[in-house]
Image (tube, rainbow, N blue to C red; front, side, top):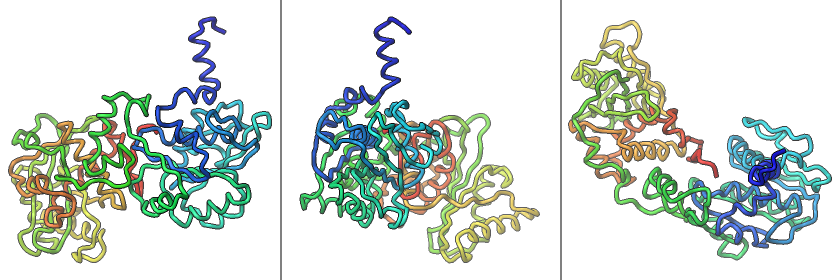
Length: 456
């Protein structure tokens, strides 16, 4: 044992972090924790610390030792509800960070799967309370048949599930609280609950006062990573975003250059399929394999009439020939999976185009495989945010010859159908290039939601 008081305090904090958690909260958090409402909501921007706030609120309820309000004497039974199992593990990690291991009965936590059995039970000498972890996707039968003392919901739940969880609290006159950033899911029904006086609402800005774990420079860095229209929600927990003047705010003429890379690079093509005039677009780019890859968009193909896969293949091959690139040198090709009527199912469109390239190059096998773009609710925002951040960092440049793509970046505001096809083609390839790179790993794609790896 050390006699150094600073080291002794550090050791005590590591041993019993929950004991000191009340001293780590930001300026606004006590207002939420002290609220005695039976149903309450904490909404704030990403990385504000919402999940940590939810975890400490839960543990103070479970131990019966709450610094800001009276709570039931333990043991109590509760439930954590998240929108997916992957998110449930993230939530359990936050709990494990501040829950003293000596309090847990048979403590068994794995960083990949969470607590064994998705349950946490405190030892009798620490109250004997228990909480179970469930997801919004589990059926109503799983969510029923239990009388609970508290429910913690992380991120907005479906309306029907919310009603079911409220019913679980009636017998014990329990409490429910939500921690969330209001984006990616329907939230108008929550506004109705607040207006009717049934849900107590607490909103906090992402500021150094509210987030002592972040300084202003870090907050500015976080803000730059979001698109302009989502900043009110992502940074401040507002219910709705704002209409952007230009969707890709970070794009500027500084990103337009005829300079080409020196040294070894990889070659990628992004393709958006469509039947109508101007709706088939292919974007040619070069990129490095760095932690923060550099990407040079050097050419584009866009149909000027209704085309079939053979005509599109000829246009793409001509684009490659302009740069003395052999089709076999293409390292990455990503195509839209929309059907667009060009060959049946969406995957068949990519296969038909690859086969047309094979026939026109007179090779046994297609010189490159066209991967299917990662699609789903949230994928557009994910890729767009990566692009905007790459522009801001100076990692992404466009050759002046790419007039159609440049026009789209200059004028796209979020809904213009005639501008989106070259942007989609570029986004498919750029998402594939940047999505798994360490420098951009703060972003991840989650079906139905865009999240940030930054700790909450």
